[in-house]
Length: 424
Image (cartoon, rainbow, N blue to C red; front, side, top):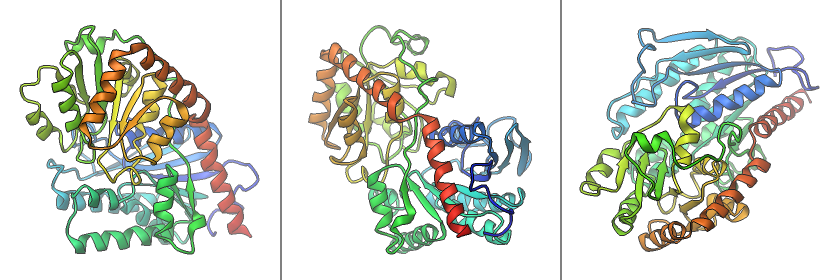
């Protein structure tokens, strides 16, 4: 490594650069994850420079008060946050338009990534996939001053988009697959959330399998605690004391949310809440027309997360068949932290079913199978004591294994090993 003299391989503070698509106050789940990782690293004494987008996730448009400039820089107690224009598009299903937006955001991010000067190591987050090559190019343009690159993969792309049918053009798929492999090979380390994702990525980088590491996401067990089910969220949306089944998260085409509508038709005594937004919401709302026990509530402020999760008696995590090995719904940890049981409709043998079995925090059924899904919900709604027992088991598990501090230590340890290897 060139640039910063004598990088801190002996335990001293590091200068780190983080490139990510979302960061607080943006409400995207990946932004929540990276914000907390940065806070934990800063709490360990490290200087961090963040390059991210202006807040835009909630309405797929730059939030009021943040527009007017293509980028801005904020100073913090631990470093700086450089925010750039994300070039959002109003139509979330227009993949060509989204690709152009990602390209523009990546280009501006690369320019801002030059600003911090010498850095011991860089962490870049995907999606978007372009963040990896952006970080690599910025480090090269700075004559290696950004040190080794750690490429954090939240979802394997383009695999998930191909399996959902969102991308079907063979040339586009081939180009994205080449970019994916190229990006992995430019990184000193690739981090993924599960063993399934690790196997997927390792198969794409023969000879470099040892560069792929599993570091799971975390849950803030202090901010998210078990709470009473009678909440202001229920009152706000006209929900009484009846049982509530909730899906909280992105309303996209990777999620089998029509399963909830099937369940709502067969379990009329329960209220089904879809809390979130995304490209599939309009279509799902149209399909739910006439179902009086279905509520669409939209994204809530981050400080209401614990309350929202507590409002449900059962939470669901549905993922379309074939996606369990390329996507890990990290919301599962948050649900468990709230001590609520999970019903997951996901491929058997993948990360979430394994997590639920290890923790005892819920049950898993095959994906896209309405009969099994409805039966699992009916069982938990009919036996609230069992649901409470599963929820308590999930809470105990995440308290022991999924803390933010443990994840930050894992990243710091990996970076120190990379720096020591570079010096040798």
